[in-house]
Length: 417
Image (cartoon, rainbow, N blue to C red; front, side, top):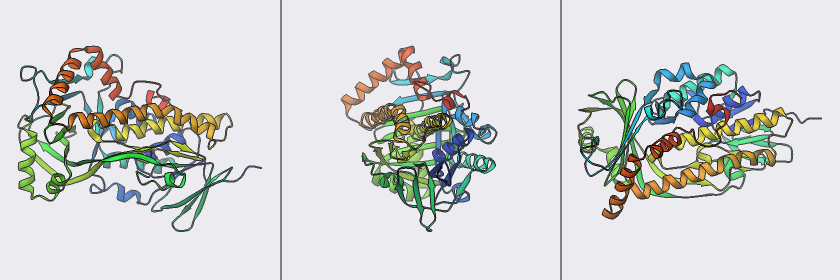
């Protein structure tokens, strides 16, 4: 006789990765329940998460397949070009100005990706709103505000105790509640990583001149500075500074902040106007030693937190959601226990290499591009110029950034489960 459960999968964390997983599982016939300490309404406020995210085109395909196109596409800004500059002064590079730059153009791979851009920029609050709307429309149970207090794993079920005393049972529990994951700790999964002596300063600005769908990232002596295009001729700035300087910028008077901003921004897009608050985020690397344990799997920042230098953090979580959903739905359809170690190990094997290689690559990038040593600057400049001249290398990096390299889950190919 089957043991009755409250759900097929309990997902701790109703953020962007957790909510995407819930929708994917629901689309494949499984019953998820989401648990989050924050009410959905609070997560939609502009002050809750002031960041914007660069979404790989394969991850955006997943959202389209799950029915989110109508909610997200009006807020999605195509990134058709990316210009990476290494120099001591801000501003857009041109071929006659310096040989040390990289230029990626989506037109080079348009025939292979059905006209997709290199990626899409969306404000996180719009992503959260679209996901919340879809979750509610699908009738997925959401317990919020509610917090996981503990997890007990038995041979046939995982039991999740909430801080209000309620106990839920399911064959599988997913930890998707961020770097301080209680589910991960309950499973005895350790993490490795370290702090970077840097703070990410994030704000949104209105531009005087059209951005043309071009993303700029240039490497200054103080750290990387990214200008990422948003709709309505706005841009999201991700400004990396040393910890003390980052905190000083957050508390600076508006006119002082604007003066520092313009010195780094340059004048190639005209005058800029800061819109809304300035946010700061400490930067660090955190990797779970494994992605699963008995009746437990990890997703998103609970599994991997990386430096935002290439904007791949959320994309890692969305790729993980697509892979985990496919593994679980296929296992359920052939009658397997979806919480068994054999099933969960497939997810771990599928995502481990991509996660580790990308995290290692981002860590190397932080060291290489947050370094003003003249020899290192010269070496990276020569490397950038070489890659820029080799068309196959450029196309590979564009496919990699778009999430179109490797063994893709069906949702990332735009196919339903």
